[in-house]
Image 1 (tube, rainbow, N blue to C red):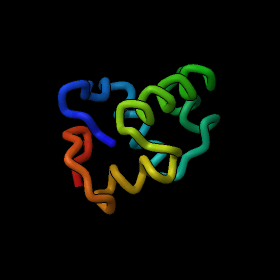
Image 2 (image 1 turned 135 degrees about the vertical axis):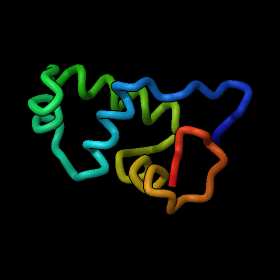
Image 3 (image 1 turned 45 degrees about the vertical axis):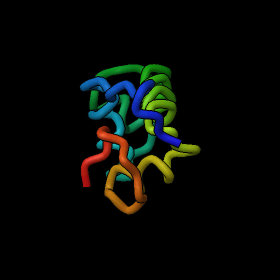
Image 4 (image 1 turned 180 degrees about the horizontal axis):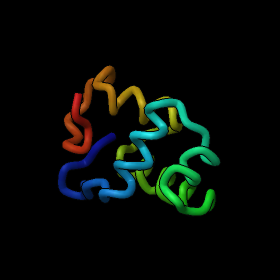
Length: 77
């Protein structure tokens, strides 16, 4: 569960990567679009999932589109 005292905002790049994830893009497609390696994409997704306290990509996307009840400021419905 989200803990305000330990919350860290997503970086600009993590937000960009998660926006691509929200659009349904594959890691390879995200890497090509953002001109980064697939390993960097995976690192950004992993960091974002940790910060959002999401169990997987679907959980994170549901949070990002505002369908999960949360108080995390990284989530904008």
